[in-house]
Image (cartoon, rainbow, N blue to C red):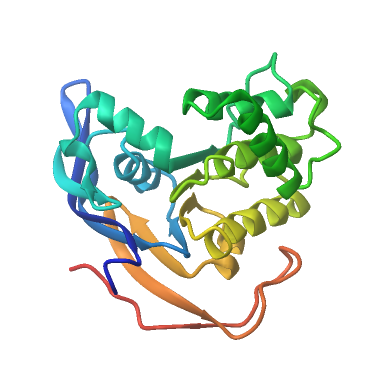
Length: 256
């Protein structure tokens, strides 16, 4: 793996949370890396540490131990203000709850993040409109969240992330609230972000149907990496969630 491909490299990431008088270890010195232009799926049961890992990788939650290097920078070595700016400039986030503002139209939802970046008003509007067109919402730009379906809300969230041209795109259970048709649309958009925009896409999910769209699948359980498999597709991804494309998996790398 060349340094130019690698987007994130993390070593020894450890995190525990206090519950009453006890501590729960959620991440147990996990090593992780991800490349530009690839979709990396982080899978595992509830409570396995998936979301905590992505929060640590993206600069949202500081680990108790370990190092995370993103785009060549030690993100937990940055001062708070610089860390916030790093996320704003380089990271896109997509959550299962959409995180949309109830009073804003779809176009305004995307514009607002660009304005926070300091993008001029006219350019922000143009980029927001282009991003919404890319996700197929060119006729829904003036609609507010209450007027949009769940799938459309998630596509607005994806457009908001893509409009920034992020080099790192984090998605936490992006299809869990969606039906099969909309889930397929969303994962294909994430795949496009990697293949056409060159982003490193890190997607947390427990939905095994998404494996068919991954370049790499990392399984977490009880805070440990159980397997790390690169997926070689023997055919195109499926056109529905009804089945999986044939895949050839390279041997798993299992942590001791």
